[in-house]
Length: 171
Image (cartoon, rainbow, N blue to C red):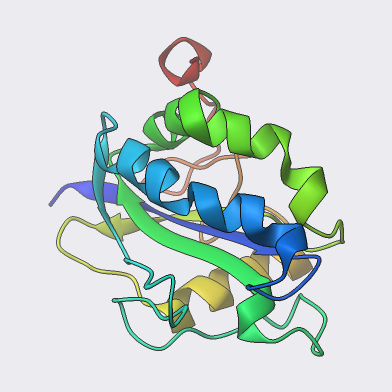
């Protein structure tokens, strides 16, 4: 069985969706998703309905590591499946996603919560939101482990510490 990377991103918007302060972020969602869909190593993602803010992979939950008073319409989250961590990094740091990242200070609050978490899954497993928030909360409380890790301290599919292949991850 082939292992794949589940990848969950999290950002807390400065204002709820619909506020002009975060409209630049909302306006970029379609092009950022399209870029992911066309990226090497990308398999699937939960699709967000921008009107309802709901996702296709089940009910969305808020991680406990973000301020409890923030509603779901103030949390920008994605859940996707990739071939490997290098594929995610190559996508994240180039093109329209990199451009959006460069403006994150305009739209998102800074805080102690992780902005993403990765973990290995079996080839045909589709992660859900409960699993994703559990993993990001685990990364927040325990740091990088084989069950929940980041780019700085990744683990291979066997649970051993590894290093990101910078040549494959470079934009």
